[in-house]
Length: 160
Ligand SMILES: CC(C)(COP(=O)(O)OP(=O)(O)OC[C@H]1O[C@@H](n2cnc3c(N)ncnc32)[C@H](O)[C@@H]1OP(=O)(O)O)[C@@H](O)C(=O)NCCC(=O)NCCS
Image (cartoon, rainbow, N blue to C red):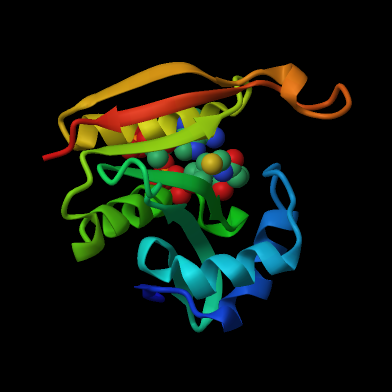
């Protein structure tokens, strides 16, 4: 069985993160955004690799005005690796880093139709023996055009 390793990303990982996102239902962004996250937020981001190939990642950051929160921007897992607990392990990996020693809540926004992601955060709360609160975050009318759902905040915590 091949081993999946978890690492802090480097700028060399940005292009593969962008490619993985382009193969999912996640919002697409420029390659620059991923390279920038790898350069400036590597401490709160993680990549999973199998045989040196990127198979999953989490991009996250600690908002400067809320040092007890780690905000997860995107979670992506290659279709071949889904349903094996990889996304949950990636989130727990970040929470276990020293940089998160003062973090009490993990937050992410999720669209109402993204059931996989909703289950991911609800199950994370159960695994951490804590709560998952859901509230409105970004209303539909903030997005241009008519093809973006609203985004709900999933707030997991307090985390011990
Ligand atoms: C959402 C996503 C990251 C989950 O990755 P994953 O590695 O398969 O997730 P895990 O295996 O850790 O699953 C976590 C929990 O969610 C559940 N789950 C995962 N996919 C699911 C699905 N499609 N439907 C319902 N539940 C699902 C799992 O059963 C698991 O619960 P369990 O611990 O009780 O078994 C992955 O499906 C993905 O990359 N999707 C496309 C991109 C996306 O939507 N990203 C999230 C937006 S931030």
